[in-house]
Image (cartoon, rainbow, N blue to C red; front, side):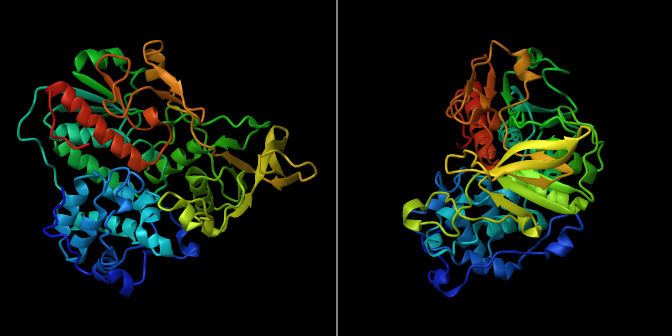
Length: 492
């Protein structure tokens, strides 16, 4: 429900009078010297001017599902920010999104792609405003624990403390249930903490939310690998409901010859290690390689064109890599999309991440044929150009010097050594169009084939965005609350 008192916008001509501005970055030469966030916050008046650009469209596609998986009421809180009502703005934002400080930092902002002003390549700076609302709310003390007034006597266990698990925990805790969250790693957050580099999101934001959620009665149990240290069957027996939010963590197999050479790694162990170094944790980690992987003074090749590949690029530069080359099998996209053909959907167009802008060499329409080496150690990556069907073009082979190579081509499902292993034969799985193995459950009740066992997030839908994980956690929490109590007031 909207908290706006009337349907008029505060600045009806704002989009005509004010140019789009977003937060600036520290220069690349400065930011690669540290692992902290490098975005320079905008002042409150600047943020309010950007919020004033929102047109209050008759049908705002930014809401979703085209633009926003959690259905943020974007025109409403833009208007509230313009009118300097930060408290009402965070209340509105929290009504759909538990963690706007996360999404305001790491979401690719499909809402801006769906903005009507994007037809003129000048969408409202929605992501910038969202982050500003969350940061301002913390600054003014608006984000505090909201414990339930009445306890239900029901117990819920959540496996995994990534964005899906955290969102579900907060919703179920506020509904009055006794909630216990079990996390394999030493701190909560999942790949939000251990996969996303600190230069994109510092981890104190996770710590603050964990503190808030704990203040609402949720108990976090870290260092517990469910299915290994603690049996799933025991959790099911001891709780009224169990929600599995294990994420999608198994690296997709590339099948590239030479993968076993020293110096060739999957991307995630590399990112997890560096995040643990920054967090002053032991780099040993369940499920990931523990031998140190460092890019200092090395020639680095990253195979893959997505966000994980980009995170490897930025991490390698900060560790002191001599040169970083990123290989993408897809053709180089056009600089600008055909608006009338694709708007309001996510468009394929040339995008340059902040990490790529730090000096990466990008090769498009290139296949990785082989990792080559001497005496078992990587020395280069053999590549070739491909046609529109991704088939190698004869005579186009070339070799890129490499001391270190990372494969970042996505994930094929959850780890199979814990929960899935214990529930083998009981839990229904399927393989999606990308070849990922996911736990079967629909997006209405989120129930699996095992009694009292629900699932949400990447383990259900496959590798996806943080904002989708938050949505799934919220919806699964509602489904569990309804199943336990017969009715629910939690939102979908």
